[in-house]
Image (cartoon, rainbow, N blue to C red):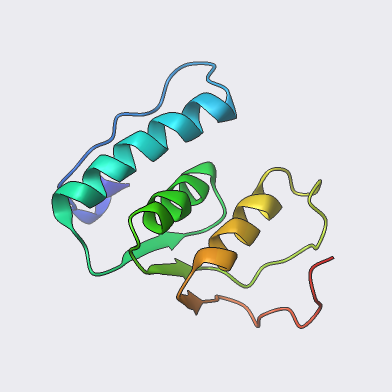
Length: 112
């Protein structure tokens, strides 16, 4: 995807492993993102979606006291089991975020 748009990343975390667990991915992402935030010292961190990397980025931003912007933040099922683990990842990112940029109208139903 990056090649298609002619984008060259400044940093590559190199976290993907064959048959990795979500816990392993989360820990590698958290360590890599923490180091990246420390190195770059961004004014904010922008995350998109509801992936495990969004969860880890949310934690890293929180630990480093960096404001979080959550893009594509409006989707909600209000069921932590479906979709799993995405609904949990969304909630963590939203609890931590400073700004939300939903791609759909934000749900008015409160989370259980």
